[in-house]
Image (cartoon, rainbow, N blue to C red; front, top):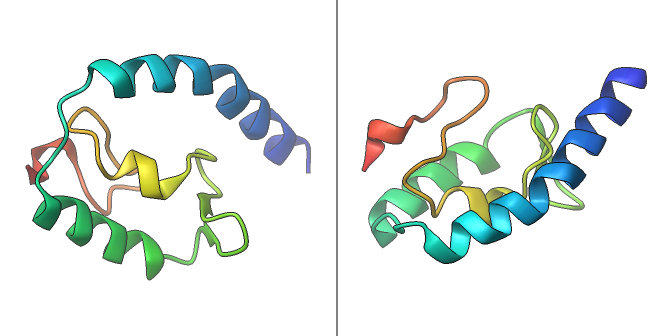
Length: 81
């Protein structure tokens, strides 16, 4: 419970940074984003209601689109571009 709260606070703090990075970041191709999203949707760590990862509390629909991002449990990496 405490660990979840800490992860949520980290995500809340990082969100403005991610938003800024998203504006400046280079997106991946549609094929790569779709591949990453399929892996996330099949993952047991996905919170279905909010579509957030339970490990890093990111919104997976956004995270899969950035070249600089990677899966916190190693299902996909930055090199999948």
